Image 1 (cartoon, helix red, strand yellow):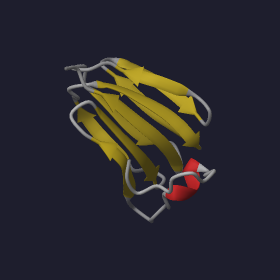
Image 2 (cartoon, rainbow, N blue to C red; image 1 turned 30 degrees about the vertical axis):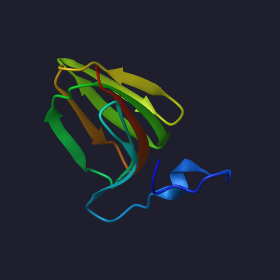
Image 3 (cartoon, one colour; image 1 turned 135 degrees about the vertical axis):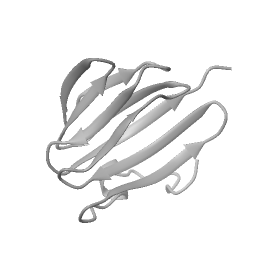
Image 4 (cartoon, one colour; image 1 turned 60 degrees about the horizontal axis):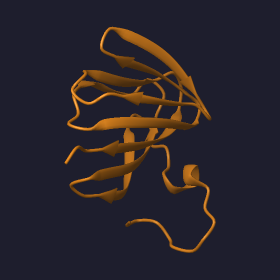
Length: 108
């Protein structure tokens, strides 16, 4: 783990700030097995369609996002989670400002 305090009760959303016209990220862990990253999206920002080598779980912390997995579109709001399977194109677009936790688990 990195970029996060140990043995302290934290509010994940407070660990990443919004910046106008940007997608901001804060990596909490990254190795061959897993990647854990916090994101803050300004309104209208997005991560365009791409594929991942691992299964990617998004948990929306604040706001709402439109998540596309293959040909399917999902509206995901704060407190909800969705998994984007490895190898399937996916994209994330902000409905307004929103924050998410992304956990990617890579196969051995």
